[in-house]
Length: 161
Image (cartoon, rainbow, N blue to C red; front, top):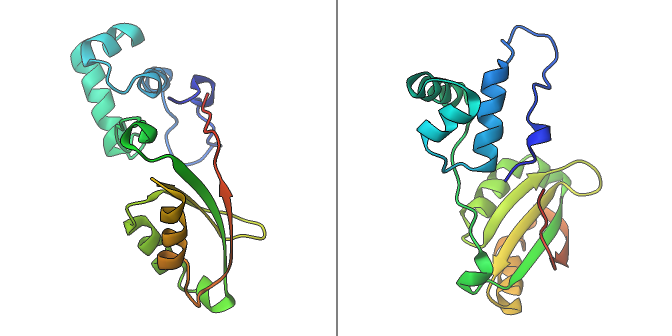
């Protein structure tokens, strides 16, 4: 779920067309419940169902809606150890960061990879069943000469608006 107050048009004046208020309303509703039926969505935003469907399709084709996702309870699947791994690349590794990110994204334990500023270059969010899985992930995916340093933190809670 996305905080609906975040869904406003933040883009500065540019050549890009701004989003109509009805499109923002559609995004707010989908951010709250991506499984809402088109009929219910249309009713909530005050459009005919065919018009609403067309607007959702247009938002998808413009890349504003990237997809619809399930919110999975990983603990219900037996994944009880979550780690956030800060990664600092070596000077040579920074030129290969795209390859490192692609490799991390292929690992089944990886939930997210964030490219960040500051002392670290990446934050890698992973889930494993046991602490040994966390250690194995680090050994397998982060023991590379392109990586200068890692720092792992256990995640005790994940909170969303």
